[in-house]
Image (cartoon, rainbow over all chains, first blue to last red):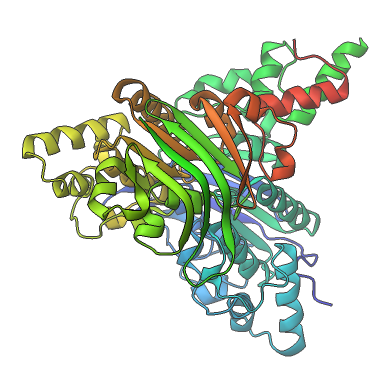
Length: 280
Length: 263
């Protein structure tokens, strides 16, 4: 049985001195050096327009470096074809309506894996597993545009999961999701992590990234300004740097600092620190 | 002066499903009312009905009454609704006119259609641009904006209409934390200084906690809770309704469950 989240050895992603200038002259990235190990989970945070989406589009060849270079699986991307990179890196776009085009949910999810050469029973199983992973099993025959926005976003995620790429990029997966939808996204990231996939997620939700990702990369004006685990990025010493790009640490981090408990970026770490203090 | 839904039930045209059932909701001038609920609970439909677009523009069957001040929406004409109530749709792409060459002209599209004097149009657009801090976007092509930028421009176009009531369907869904704060500040200022009544659908309960005076919860087409924001957002049933409580409420609860104090 093909699992949509089958084990994988992941995929290393890297940029070296990456710079990118859009045709209209907008300088979107400058000197970005980033190394993401195979099987690592990383969240990219920063303001709208800081270069997060531009950066990830280099990993599947949708954009090509103006200066510096991009490595996927240790190999320079160079002019490798998008169709070639599609086997390696799957990107779930922020706006699902930019990727949905089929008339039925099942056909939408089958398109990607079929393009990668899959067919017959294996294709069917892959599609079924991907729909189950996002909670859309039973909606196979529905027109995607009869689903609400939040379920169309989950459909976009299923389409990429079905391709079983060793690296998955999620561009703002929690926007427009209710509490159950956010819980679903957390579960999908956890399953991808457990399966050894590389996951890169762009998000504006500081609580979500602090609780789900072991590594955060903060961008401002096309550059990486902070890179480390949540406890380090959201530590009090970095608050002035975060403020330069209008980011507030999550409430748990602010409370931990207020109570003199040190860096407690997540609810669980704050509660653990409070328990430890009570025990002493 | 208020926007009032009384005993409202609604079905879309061609559908037998009742999407809203016996909804009573009042938005007074000068207050911000939050609406929360799970996806597909009826939030967007409630927005369309409150704005009078359903059934006047898109059809469907309405029971009960909706009044915007003294105007009953069921029989109202589109221009009468447009003069009283501004609506921001969930997807900014459906909102933008698609005809304006620059962001500035896009924001001016609504006020120009109200046949206002040119100086007044300019003043309103500039004010909306200032409130949302989007001065560096005014010369851009509206078709070439990021999702978050398009959402701010669509909201600016509604603010420039200076309506008595604003109905906003997830206005910050694609915004970064700074954009979300700016929208919150702009809406609070509008309610306080322009006496506008605001109905806002939001998943970000942290934003509502600081902005709304009252919050209502919708579940499967019915309002299941409504009251002062602090009370509704601390209601223990929120997670069961698919709504994330504000961070402070969640932390407080986690601490209490662990037997530790945040004091």
